[in-house]
Image (spheres, one colour):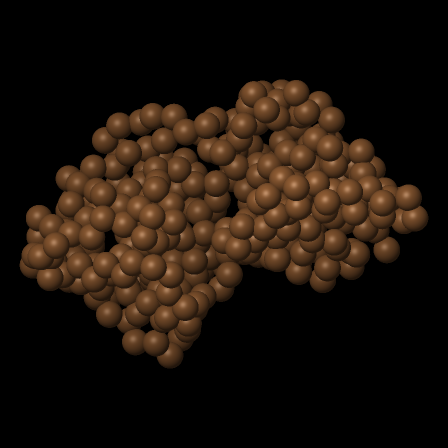
Length: 337
């Protein structure tokens, strides 16, 4: 049975979820999978790598090692083949570029990332990604809006809050955000700002009960917030910039033009302003219920296509990497269905 080691920071958030998802998928595909969540402290991480080096002496090198987001140069010799699944907005060019020639390829979550790394001369293949299916069919849907900022400072939260403060007549906006970046607006009766971390059950009910999700992201490595929204059949309002507009299309969402464009790591950073959010919200508020229902159904089908396509492409790419056949042949650029 071919062996695969997956490396990621054990941050308890997005990367940890990605690690679990990939370990489960590849385990079901028949591989012996060793998921490693690295501790944030360097000393503990060094002990973890030391244990991996000792394991090499009695078990040999693993057939394939897949690193998520981070390049770990001192682990590359522990595998026969090494792949990286990068997030371009957090890619540390100065620190990691010198190790890229030691990789056997990259598996990219978005076409946007594939283009960036192919332009750097790296063999990059688009496989996509997926998110947990959060749908709860029995939860009543309400004409409310949900903004999941979490711990991220690049979700366009300030523009969303400013737009809502200008419109006390709008439906309730629920904002979920950790205390580090939260700046609740005082006196806005239609903003329910929940600071702190909700239980998973509470969050899932919110995702399903709000018919509209608004997240004008400035950048995304993949876009779990967006894809989870599609999965519950929400109408998503997001930024008309890559990779957000790869996932959300006009027939089941609303794309908000950026007011200005900057840079975040290797990716472009799209800034949406309050005026853009206002226009998008007014547009969906004017939609008849039958149109919202149709968009919701298309959003769910888009989620299913994203999920199904990723699972097929990922298993194929890993199989080719292990056998050494077409390990990094890039796929044609494509949009989510």
